[in-house]
Amino acid sequence: MLLDVRAGQGDGDALSDRALESAAAKVRRRLVPFLFLCYIFAYLDRINVGFAALQMNAALGFSAAVYGFGAGIFFISYTAFEIPSNIILAKVGARRWIARIMITWGLVSAAMMFVRDAPSFYALRFLLGAAEAGFFPGIIYYLTRWVPARERARTIATFMTAVVTAGIVGGPISGALLTLDGAGGLAGWQWMFLLEGLPAAAMGIVVLFVLKESPAEATWLEPDERAALQSALTAETSVQTERAHGVGEALRHPWLWVLALVYFVVPVALYAFGFFLPQILQAAFAGTPFQIGLLSAIPYLAGAVGMVVTSRHSDRTGERRWHVALGAAVAGAAFVGTALVQGLAPSLVLLSIAMLGLASMFGPFWTLATSFVHGVGAAAGIALINSVGNVGGFVGPYGIGYLRDATGGFSAGLVAIGMIVILGGVLVLVVPDSNAPHT
Image (spheres, helix red, strand yellow):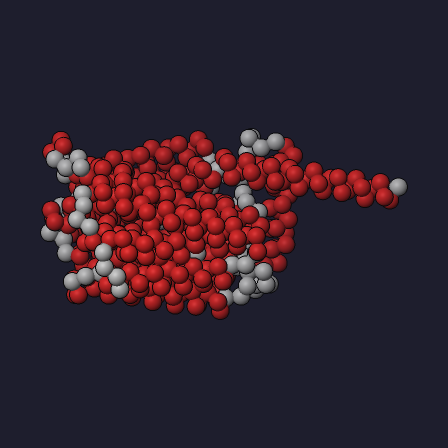
């Protein structure tokens, strides 16, 4: 009889595991592609100013430092409003707040077509950062309510391939839109802001009809799948209950501040790269905006490969820190190498390796970061890392713009970025392993 009971329990566990696996697969198919598409719009509207600069800087008389400051000031307001935005999201729900974020940032992004001078450029970039604040950490927090920890790095990496996908598709699209220069009395860069901003606002309306707050509301899951997924997430929550953090406690957590410093190096490199890549390529290759757009897709394609492969390996091994550190080492060395070569081909190869290493850090890093805080403090903790880290989004573009004006080229800025990324890779190794108990 005891054997029969145990056999029945084994069959029940097997059924539950299959239901959980099926539920997780449906979440990846139903939610992740939609969130992925939303993030493509977010990232594209954030970095398309890099392509606008090919025409806008000359038309409005912007120096590299003025442009770099305006591109980077986005992150000052983004940082200031990040934590409040994510706390509001946790209270009012992801569906309504993410919709609000997308609608407002889409409208502000489209309004960039009205830039006339440096002050209006700074003001609209500042407003864009305030409008978008909370989107990315909000999505990361949202995914923790749908995806068990054992599959989170892969899921986050799949979502974050939107960063590199936006670069792959955004470059050619932005370059093509610049060719509308003069149509309807508008400059090409004005058409680009308008036609890439309004779709984001439209997607915000769609969010209201697509997103569900939790698996309990997911009618597209079978009852056994819903129960298995909710049970797995509840079990994780119960294990973490003793380590649950309130908002204030999360914001005082020492390892979160260390992780914020580690993450700082990612936006430094990512946005210096994104905002100046078209100009770096233009300096090496005097092509048309569309040709430059096509070439700019190559490093992002390499980044997509690195991101997916590294995150899958990180999930399979359960190791996070060394995956982040090695990605940083590869990226940093490649940025330094780019400063030491000349010509389009070697520059493009090294920039592709740099993006591969940088993108490889994303999935393992956010899985490591989300292992340190639990409970209601999770949203604030994620936002803390993202907001403090994203100060680097101001430092990188402004720094490379300043150094370009001071030296007449990009080499000094690329070396500085490479060394900063390498330091971030070293710093992550002092953080406790994600499988070790955290306090």
